Image (cartoon, rainbow, N blue to C red; front, top):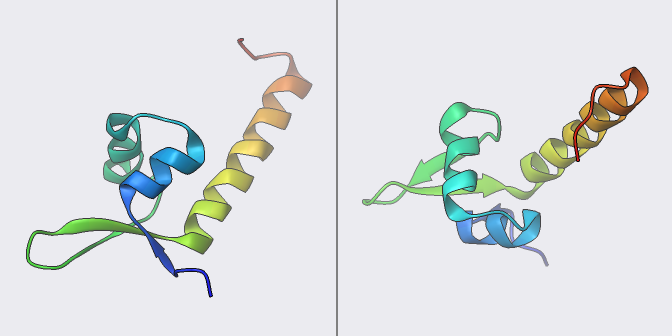
Length: 71
């Protein structure tokens, strides 16, 4: 059974981004997450990460369709 929650390290690996970028996504609220434990470590629900990915696909499609995209 897949884990319900992912660490930010898991997110960075899945999206192939830096830890700074993952932290920024969470802190901005763009990628919903919770803080758990005494040290307040961030956890992202697997379904939230999947929703984020789908939103990014849709935003990319809209940018390409409108001609406003960069390499």
